[in-house]
Length: 71
Image (tube, rainbow, N blue to C red; front, side):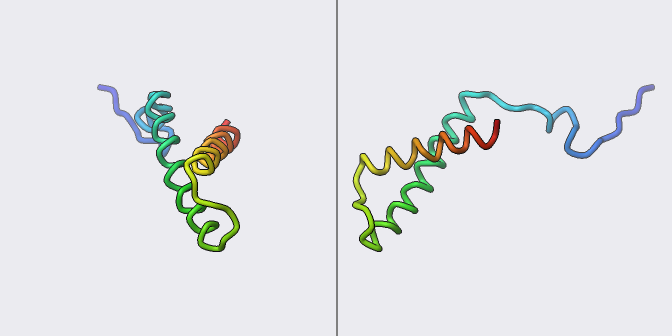
């Protein structure tokens, strides 16, 4: 009989990196949401305008930053 011991966060279920497509979509959605909040705050302070182009740029910058930090 084989006994399995949990080794904390290195268990087989926790070691999975996940589906890259799901991670990409989650990153895009969360970066867009966070970018919208930051952009709204900057627009509230009259620093930048809240436009679709600025939101897309902010989301792309945040996605790239997330990619660089996690690699």
